[in-house]
Length: 274
Image (cartoon, rainbow, N blue to C red; front, side, top):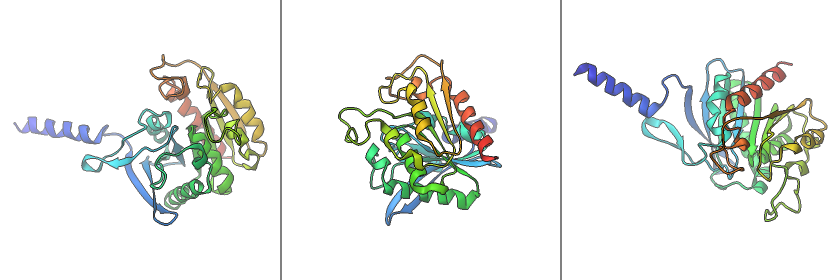
């Protein structure tokens, strides 16, 4: 009976806390812009070498919350490329902050992601990470999250130590409000103001109409003042389980996640030490 009880309790521990060897996770909540709340999921490895802030695609409203025993979770976005690989970044000795949408803008569109207010919220997250760890902070976005990343690099300048763009939005749909001002997506942002080193990551088979991989070299050319710019192309993976612009497809590097994340981390480590 005692042995069975011990096994039962052990199973409960795994059920509620997940992998016993997973990195420490918690939800951090900051006050920004007055009474606005900005949450992020914090994943802490031992002996970290850098910090990364991950921006999911879509509307980015993860709705971070605490479940049983304080175990963190989210109501949206678990399949997103950067969300589902967040532990992989921690495995590479990076402190990870998976950022949620702010309390006053629960669903972020491209206009919001390019705003000063969004940059102010990102700045608060960067400062909290640097205050706790005193390490370089890189911003990494995927799909619609790629509007957030250059916005931070442009407006916050030296606060951002580097940026990574994955499945970057370089085309605007006809019904988007930014169609007239940003027909070429982030390429129409002031990318020449970015000095931080940059990595552009694309899948050759990405069929999403707003993130064509062939535009990657255009992004590189637009980052004319970046200290270092590289483009990585990938192919292969598993058969898609989602629509072309969703995460379980080539758009989200489905089936080759570990390879892509390891290459991103290698670029960050090599660039941060130079």
